[in-house]
Amino acid sequence: MPEITCLLIDDDADDREFFEIALGAVPLSTNYITAPDGIKGLELLATLNHKPEFIFLDLNMPILSGKECLTSIKLLKGYENVPVIIFSTSSYQADIEDCRTLGASHFLTKTPDIDELSVIITKLLSDKNLPFVVG
Image (cartoon, rainbow, N blue to C red; front, side):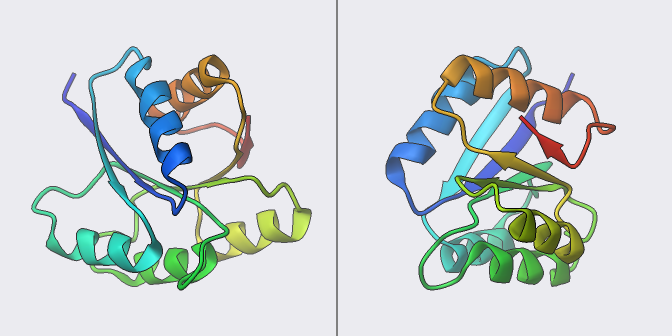
């Protein structure tokens, strides 16, 4: 099976490290790239030769919010069908519905359990028929 590239756009360095550890426990061949905010994430996407198969996006970020970043990603040529999974501490129904409307493929509320996150990421990378809200 080819390597699956996952991009995480998140302003919290601890959350990026936590995600990397969880992704390392996924029983699939993965490549991890990251950006510390929405602006840098969009700049990175514009320069990549190989687009990521999955984009995980924090919702609550300064400068460019996750919703604004999601809207911009969906407008990028070639990224219309790349799954964007919202990865957030929020579980507000209004945020969930807004993200669905803006084109997110899934909404994942952050968990403090690395093993649980690893299992959820495995499911997301393996099964395109999961419900919109996972975790």
